Length: 250
Image (cartoon, rainbow, N blue to C red):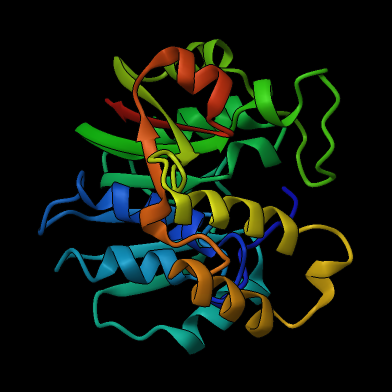
């Protein structure tokens, strides 16, 4: 499995998108759940999950270096970090109440085995919360541009994959919604965002670009978690949502 980790810094173009996914996952996690966050990377999401439950929350990653950094950074009493391979989890059957796996299955050719492992270690009635790029948007011509991805899935392909291991699943699309409601300031913000993220200009210090945008629109340049939503309309999932988000029940 290849490495493509979200940096541990909020002043980042992708931070809001990643945090939004974890916040959505919280609505499926109960206070006494045992939770696995697989491919935890820098561990910020595992910490978000652990703050929501009093039971054990395990962050797992295939990288020993990543796990060592997580152990230094996060120290909640109910959090634990382990080196784990998602295609061969070292837990007994029916161990977890919930599993979170964001932007993981596109990184391994063993994705079928990985999904089967998730189902194996979930308790009856347990829930998997998963996200992965929407190939209809990220690789519409079938050519995967991201060098870290071994494959990407379209909506129907992901449904088929999840249906092999789970009796129920609900599909959503994560998309950027900051400019859905039109106004003069939103129109200005949309144009400034395109300008300030364009090649060349984006080399200027972020504090300058974001400060100017805040002065004119009241909004930071980089998206916040609240600038995203989960789309339920299938047409919008397919054509407007670059990320597929699934909630699967065993």
